[in-house]
Image (cartoon, rainbow, N blue to C red; front, top):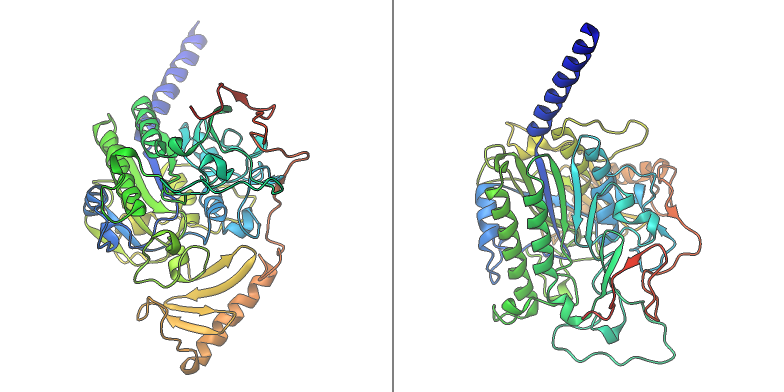
Length: 479
């Protein structure tokens, strides 16, 4: 009897201790906008878009003015999920498409999986884009809950309004041409509808409502919410209340709706029981798309390039009382740093059986005195190709041998290679050293395998049938 009492007492103590530790662990929200330009929001210099909620977030938080993503969608998201350069964990030349037989390998250890080990509830609301086969979808990659699109909102047939902006005529379908399959909206493993133009106008509102519901429903334990919006990626479909609101076109309308969404999410956090224990990060998956209305000034270039405008993204870290208000850091950081940083804050352990390129940047976020970037060198990959190398303020673009001092020339306008041959040589050698790791062009020995499945199929086929591994709630007409 005495032994039983001791055992019960130890169990109660262990349970109590576990609950205390769970209560101490912070909640995490990552808001990831699609194709947002560096200067599309007020805190980063927008001259036309009104973003009062992001203005307040920056006033209460810390701007990261040199935060790097990748040039395009899938690689950037792989970097965030795995803590690696995209080429290490998802070595593809561009992005993933509907029905591809490859995706993020289930053997990769994601940020969601590591946080689940620490007792976190995990949810993704929005765009995934790391593979649409069953083995690659969020519920197989550490997430408890999933609501959103499996890839970009432009990946579908023109007849559904997926290839044209709000109000534009639908492109004519050519009978002899192969088109992408219908775009599905998914909850967990259930297909809710086939997305049409009208559905796209409700995406921001619906994602926001789902995010607020998730926050409100997980106040008694730590949670990780990943909110990757489909906005402001082409096609442009701002919600009805925002259409024409700015007078600057559909793109600005949608940026302002995104700002509204951020406000709703932050309000939900502020009103939650554990409001002082929630860290929120706002960022973009790559540079803005100039042809669709994004502004990346003063950076050069845009989405799809390894110029600063293609990879440096507007980022704000917010955690009142933990992150200093109204501050900024110019130190180099990036998507791959989020996994080690959040896992560290959650008192978790990083995997020891694989290479991680990201580092814990909490000293930068918390404003620790004299905190510096943990990255002596940063590599700019576009797909499988290494296109530039940065050390300190110096950036070398490899193809043409252009050298820029980013501290003095953030716009990459003044090539100073001729006067700095020693620096060009040093950075060229750093690039060559990558051959023994990720490779400069093809896959190097440090690239991990892609996930692969046989007999890959899109989630919804051209004739409207849903793949066998997915449930569905009819109708799939988008109505």
